[in-house]
Length: 223
Image (tube, rainbow, N blue to C red; front, side):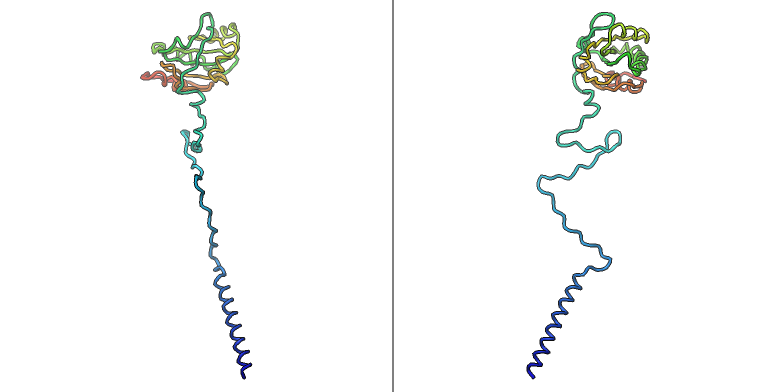
């Protein structure tokens, strides 16, 4: 009698244990259609910063924020805007010397150019017009030819009727000091000898007028 009861009790115990195992499996099984729980993400360590969010530039295009080492060089840096203009002492076509230091107190427009350069040819009539129009505003316009002989430059100036002085940078030293690596290039210098604007060549009257406004305060400069 007792052995049978022991057998029955053992069977019941086994059934109960099996039921507990099956129930646990059902509880742990994912519900159909439910999204899986994402694994936990590691938190940022001390000193880490999230990547900067792009901010719109002046042109409306997205550009990355300045890095810890400072903002990347833009147009203002390329033309040394806000800095004192480098020294400029070169022979003048027709005789004499052009010395920028002697022009301090007057607004000056410096153009590095070459007679072989099509944009230089196109710009000269426009520069002539501005030089004549703003002569009473004490404006000085200078064209500095890079690495050409005086005869070539003199013929070029005469053919285009230049109304302003031309200088000769025979070995390119002046152009290098001004970082004028491409021709033509323009710099607008105020009465304190500080560069206020700059532009690569092939420009029209609108850009020229913009540059002149930075060195002719209070003057109505029209293209």
